[in-house]
Length: 192
Image 1 (cartoon, rainbow, N blue to C red):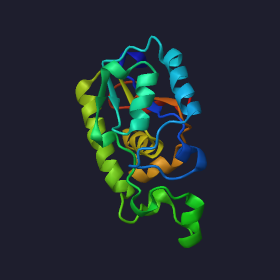
Image 2: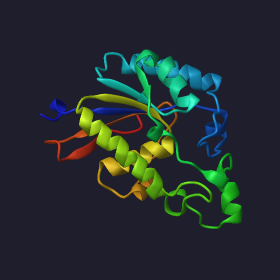
Image 3: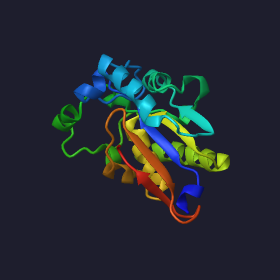
Image 4: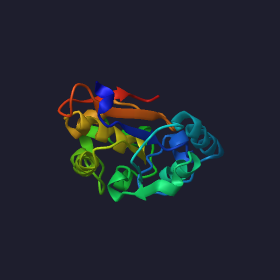
C-alpha cells in the first residue's frame, strides 16, 4: 500500500505584503501580514496529528514564522537549500513590470539577471531530495512558492523548468509521496 512509504508535506509560507502585491520575493526578508499570520495559525489544526520525523524550513523569516505559528517551531531545522529563488535584479519587481521591459520573459525559462536560473534552483532541490531520501521518513517542509514548485518538478523527475506548471497559494499544503514503491514518486496532494 502506498501509505507505507514516507510522505513529504510541503507548506508555502503565509501572505506577505510582497506576495499580496505580486512582487518577486526571493532573499528579501519581508514579514508575514496580519492575514499571513492568521493563515499560518490555521495550519496548526490542518496539520494536527501529522507524524513527521523531521521539520525543515527555509532560512527566510516568512517561512520560519509560518512554521512557528503552525506549531512546529521547536522542531524546526533551517536548511539553506530551501531558500526561495534568487531573483537578482528582479527582486521586489512585479512580473508585469519585467514584461514591460523584457517582452515574453518567463521566470522558469529565462531566470533572472544577477540571480538564479531554473537549473540553479534545480540543483538545490536535488540536494534536498537526496536529503529527504536519506532520512526515508515523513518530513514537513516550510518554504516559498517557486522553490517548492521546482522541488515538485524534480521529485517527479521533470526538469526544473517543469515547476512552471504548478501553482501554489500562500499557506497551502501539498504532499509528495510514492505510488507502488520508492521508484514511483508522485504528487499525492497539491495546493490544498
